[in-house]
Length: 396
Ligand SMILES: Cc1ncc(COP(=O)(O)O)c(C=O)c1O
Image (cartoon, rainbow, N blue to C red):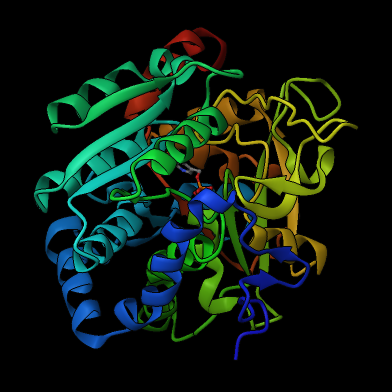
């Protein structure tokens, strides 16, 4: 039994649960009553794994970075989630949940998206499995991620803009939940390990393929079963939990999650939840959240659309609270620098989100024999506008 997983009420230590309006209760009853028997069923897992292998292109490589290792005087491997179909880890979860939705007899999927990666992954899988698809996206993000919006439309999805708050991810989730109340026949395909129980558990399960593969690949490449470090970026926490999952009980594996400091942790332009946040409820889950003294959510900021969520999932809240995972944060500037560095020395343009994990490298002293695995959650095509804007600043 993994002590970092949920109890029977969907709590991770003090965090988690199902804090929802009564009107949504019927939607959650259906999920709670059925998810375990469906997603743990061997025939379901066979279908899931077959699509991961043949459609997504898994397993993703565990790539040894010569130059990065030399520079930081250690052994750095990248788990290449950027090489998945649609360009990030998000598709692992969307395939799993779309298959689950079909099994429940659902024909219409709703989802939120921030960076657009979850939206694209959802639209892609809906196209593949003949499901109707509606994506909620904040107006600010629609402008920041215009190409992803066009891709989602091309894949057949309908986009509904969220026009409240700072018009980013949290507002898109609010809109999606509001829509779901009035359309309980839909399946809400949530994109991270956030939201009411059982969503964090379902998403973590589907993303755990990442650490399952890391374990196997380390055995094949190095004859070991665990690295010294696993480093991930954390928005809501899905790529992070995926990379940590099968190592949570191995106390000797140091687990590091990197948040977005934005313009700085003590400015009002940040998304560093573990620094700025406190215990509270967001999107139906008791977790860490950035809130004012009246419990109102503080709008987060990050250069990266997938990182500016004002909370972390409940599983991470517990991992932070118990200190099983160490949380760091890096500024927008650190992130751009790291993205340019890896582009120029390893030939890989990372997503801005993933560059948060890379940006921590100069801030940690590794031993030369350490094995360090960084989860490269996505590729940088969607962020080119931002990278081009800073080209002169970072080109040598
Ligand atoms: C490439 C990439 N990495 C990371 C994230 C952050 O999400 P999560 O913390 O759920 O992995 C996103 C979110 O959109 C993303 O697109």
